[in-house]
Image (cartoon, rainbow, N blue to C red):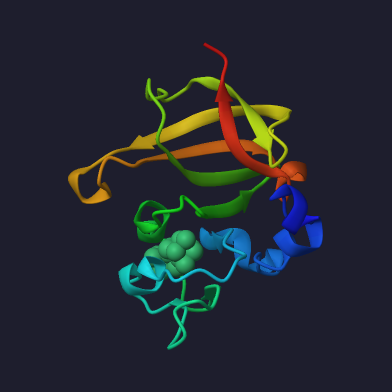
Length: 159
Ligand code: SF4
Ligand code: SF4
């Protein structure tokens, strides 16, 4: 399916997630499935938690024991292919890269969108981070219902 549509299967998506017991704090999820010559995720992680290795075409692997959830990789990936996620009560809390204008505001209600571009749930913006180090990539923190943990990929503004 991935080769034809560009949409990864649920099995492929889940292969990038840790066991849910890790998700009591933020962890990095790399939605990077193809063999491409790229490694800023590896070089930007201050905790050596992402490995691409000697062959720069190897898709990245995250060591969830080393990942502190600092979020640096989210805005360091030129492909916008990394998110951070954690679970809290009935919510999944995501950090996602966002490069559209206008910039969403804290408290804004949004739609959660899946990998097919479909609205799947309601969400709320919790934090908006922008800074010089981020090369103009905004990092949004938002919450959605946790049953959409493996389906959610981005947001759609309502206004
Ligand atoms: S969230 Fe921080 S510690 Fe985890 S992989 Fe990304 S840069 Fe490394
Ligand atoms: S920086 Fe992003 S696109 Fe490049 S290898 Fe890492 S996850 Fe993939």
